[in-house]
Each structure stands twice: as C-alpha cells, then as structure tokens.
Image (tube, rainbow, N blue to C red):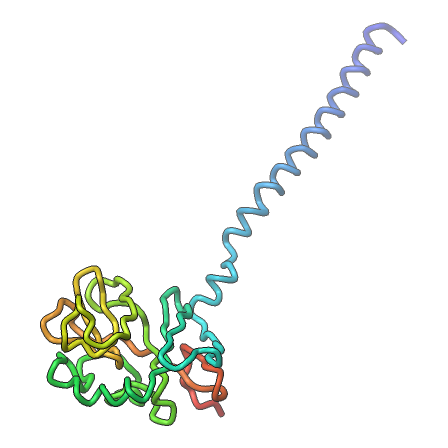
Length: 203
C-alpha cells in the first residue's frame, strides 16, 4: 500500500471518528437542553394546586385565635371567634359601610351578620386581602385599641391606608376600602377539617 493510500485511510478513519463523536456530543447536548425546556412547559405542582381546593385542619385554633392558610396564592384566615366576639357584632352596624354585606363578595350562605355558616358561626373564614389596594390587614382583636379609637370592637386593620374591618370582616365607614373582605367558598368535611375553595354538596 502506498504512503498516499495509508494517509487517505488515516484521514478517513479520523473523519468517521469525528463525525460519530460530534453526533454523540450534539445529541447529548440536545437532550440536556430539551429536558429543562420540556420541564418548563409542564406546570409545577404548585401551579397545578393554585386553583384547587385546599383541605385544612382547624382543630388547633384556640378561641380568639387566627390561623392563616394559602388558597390561590392568597392568605385565607380562619378565626375561632369567642362568644364575646360574636355578641359584639350586633352593635357594630352603625359603624359599618355595608353591615348587611349587600355590596360585598361572599357565598349566599355567608350573607348574614356573622358572615359564616350558621352551624359553625364561631369560625370566620375570610380572604386576608384588603379590598382597597390588595394589602394584607393585621388581626387586632383587642377592644378599644388606643391607636384605633375607643369604639374599636376588635377585628382587622390595614396599616397601608387605614381601612378597618370588624370581627365579621365588614368594612367600617369612612375608610378607603370600598367593600367587606371576601368570604371564599368553603365547606366542612368534619368538625375539625375545612375544604377552602369548594362548597359543592356532592352527589
């Protein structure tokens, strides 16, 4: 075999090797790029559950206390109201902009003075987002708080612009918030478990 043929054979072998190596590396790179790309097209578990109902345990919420849960990316408060808190609601009407919740968002079963299911009236389930500009109010249960006025019956105060809501999440007169806090759909699965975001009766 001539020196020229040997040289050609060596060149051809190198060419085949380089072609195969390039294909393998390129294929690997394509797969490496495709996996995160395809993964980004699939919704995350958080996104999948963002609009889904949320089951929560309320058994550890002591009377007078509040616990926060998340539903649709928003805080949902569950307050275990005491008898004194419930009794105070009747005297709030003169202070409120929408005492009967006529212009506020809630399911039909929560359009009442306590804004909850009557058989579980002590529990307030409410979206913790101010109806003014979307800030999150704070829970201020103390009556007659010095910074909120002697007529403060306890409830929720939005520090962003001063909106106030009573223990049924009803808005006070003369504040920026135009409506009561929203009551989400919900139902009881048992005395200690709530399903927030679904109030269907089932089949």
